[in-house]
Image (cartoon, rainbow over all chains, first blue to last red; front, side, top):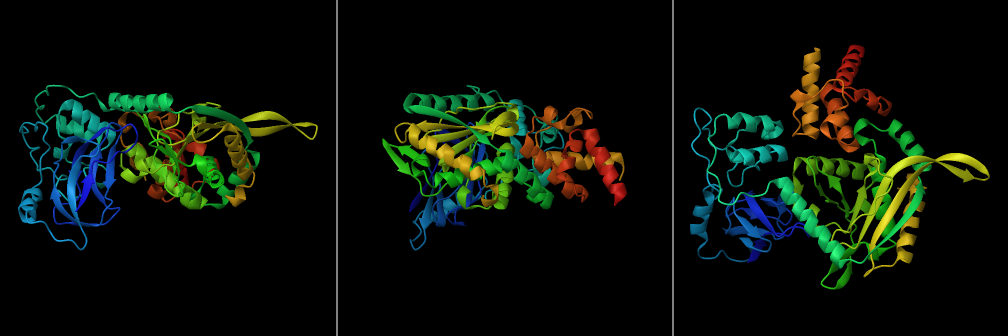
Length: 399
Length: 83
């Protein structure tokens, strides 16, 4: 019997709240299937399952907040018999369970439609982060709101409309912090741990982006709208390719030991509107073509900001790239996201005078930085790594 | 297509990128990027959304013309007249 536990979706997560099950007792699941939606302090996450088999028992109901590692469901792996109590459990779990938090009072008037999105095994509750926040503030259970956005998504307007027909739920004993405050706490805790435990070193270099930007402009002329590239994708690919030669920077520090990871999953720091950030992985970054990477990148940013990331995207990053150039920042010296051991930062591209063969010429310069963990690597190797990133960016056609 | 129909299509494309945005408050002459806190990746997704919504080609050099709501409407109206 395999246990499905509340996963740790990043160093800054201690507990999570089950929003809904996507599967019910008796359903078959395959490794990688999305089995549940979980709310963390930072985002709502689609959680994947790591076993293949049949759901035998569901132990946690929607609305419950449980610590990381809590067993939430039991999965009978293929080839093993059902446990004797399974049928009784199936009946229990087949009934959609309301969240355990106080239920909203009976709606006044016509808005008493049954919740269309909460049946176990049905599609997920689709709601934008801001709409969820407002619903929380107003004391409305989002599952009772009929979504009118794309794909039935619950929008801010839907919540406002519902607010006119719902009575507020009773005040809870200890009001929870709102999402923004919880996110700030979570980031603060992870970064404090990083600064406490990781002996950082910092390196900086200037990369000439003239060639890459000229190549990019020419390339985008040839590409259809959906295939056009942004320079950020060149940077991410260059980092991933350079990491192949510097495996010690691509990995984790776990229980006093460095673990170099064979796969390169670059985490992309993505700021969220309304504050905070997440850094989900672009899986197998080095093996994706620029075209594939661009598509994954666009999709990742869109999903991060819409609040629909998958658990593997939060647990798999082997290094993080942060780029603050759009904010006008010329260089960023980042704080490593534990248990990772390195972080690469990029600032904005600025035109600078440069002396070349006795002539002053304008060059497009980009400041690249590396924050490294001294328990795992030294400045010497870190410097060679940044030089490799620069070298790779001089041959953009090879990316 | 009327300007109102075009505006609705633009709002649909924006909703894909910034679902939490209150489109009724968008000022027509202020850059969308400044009003909605969106970055270049969001803008790219928005341009792709406009392309799909209105079936028009948008060269990269024209992206700045889509910076404001009014700019978008003018650009799309002109593109539709030409097709």
